[in-house]
Image (tube, rainbow, N blue to C red; front, side):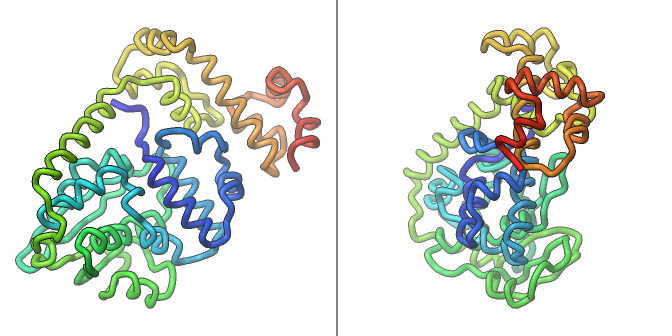
Length: 335
């Protein structure tokens, strides 16, 4: 069991690249999302981190078609080795089944469901958000990416018969029709694409059963490693990043989510030279530096948002972290 739904850096970079194409620098995007630059060095992000990135991109770009553009810009590298398994599949339907099977390698932030009917099959996307509500741009990017990758795998345009979203329309209808090439409905019961069965079951030009088996074994191995991996200090640090607030997360909370005892959690952290309290202190420090540097919040409000009962213990902790009082540090480094 993992502490938090996570997403691969391939998908994170797809969002960052989409914003960059619209003139939004990576540093500005991260600052707007309140995310540390070091997060770009992680292997995976907590789902709430990428949701914050999406909301920041929405605010920075002011582009109602941002999600559609991100999805349209998805390339095989965005979903890593899963894309090669898809390309070797016999049909597009088989490729989509592989996505269902190895979805976690791309992101824990949702799952696909195939609902076949007589003439077509609905490819339904069920988002799995964290504490933060998904941006509708996230949903639009996913469905747009399905079309983009289907075109790449099939070697020609694959157009759905119908598309629908559970949220309201974000931009002009022409933008949706340009991406999907079919009628698009909004405020429906689910978000998904209806694709003709003949398109889904048409043999793919680069189908290769032997290569498909190689990719299948590789992805199965990676998935097994991901699913059995024990909690690490990096995992816990990322979990704490999105859980710290006026009420601080406790070691018992982390142990409960993982389904292990507090003693086992403490032992695993000790093997890496950490304690829960040390990690908590480091994460509060990182969040405090980012907030004091980039936020217009008062220092007292920042203190409360990081779980300090009042400003004075926050000031003492900040001076211990940096050697300076927070107001002086802000004048030197921030606003």
